[in-house]
Length: 157
Image 1 (cartoon, rainbow, N blue to C red):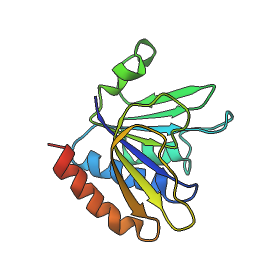
Image 2: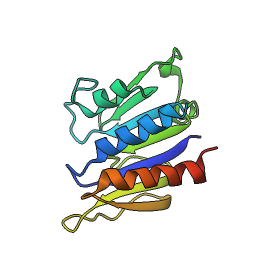
Image 3: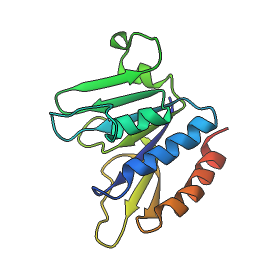
């Protein structure tokens, strides 16, 4: 199973930017990365420039999965027939899985939750996790460098 990282926080707080930075870092280290996005509305478009899934595909993740209450969309550069795979089998092919906006779906126990907070918004994390790292929305980019170093030293070989 991959290292499972959840990026969590309020709308507009930098979750996708954080996912992009994490993904770029792990891709640069040679890891295969999947980005899993929960879509809160049924009528969604994926992989367009400017949309979250498109932004992550453009930086080179190996796969994008968009999940809503009624649809699942997976775009993978692998030649494997995705219809013959279950999600758990599919995830085993990656080194790092970065989740964003996961709500009310069965989730793994997250190895790391990166919770983006400020005084106006601090949410309880309703999922099982091993470690939570809180970062401030105000200086997110600076803190992410430290978070990435910590993840690399503790979780990745």
